[in-house]
Length: 253
Image 1 (cartoon, rainbow, N blue to C red):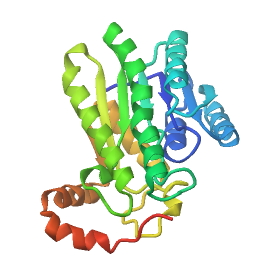
Image 2: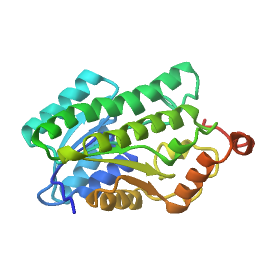
Image 3: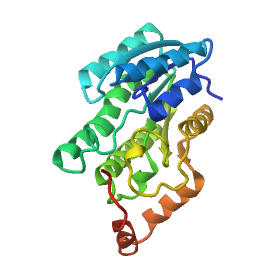
Image 4: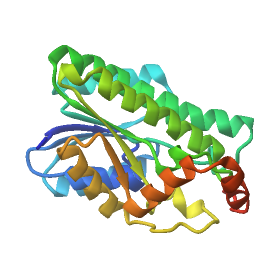
């Protein structure tokens, strides 16, 4: 079982990132958290410190490659990172601005480039010392593009494929790379959804499922199980059967 004590989490100011930070917070644990909202990030840091963790925070947009890379390297220089969780992500552009060209580019910049910007500097360090773990947060939406959020689905498919390829590529270097595919998790992101969200899960419960899966070095951590089976089924069925059903689903605000 893997038990990290120096952990970096991007997007740690709310939702799943905040829940993960509090899930790992304990005596002897160092947390390095980033977010874009200072007040929310400070509140998460305070909650984690109350549990005994040492917490460092940074206001950061992961789409900024230089700033993100420097943040990761500085954190690793201070105390080598055991676990990096590339969690920061958005669903509908700034403010839920829809699926036009600008919003789509922003989704890709955060959900794809932001993951790359977080993972690559950490992976370089971990490969050099042949130790460490990286978790890439994808989604069950990655298995089939959905009309409610086509750019989000595509971005999560990209990082899922990248993470799964990296895991196999670097298995011999003793660096664990795990891909996490959650279903619907209660957050500021999902509050904007105007469509049914089956098996909607509290962020705390989702974080605990992730923590257990990462401790076991599970290659793909996908949940809830029934939604995972459904996502695999949608991916396997012909588009002629699936498109009509999905096209009736409302989009995001």
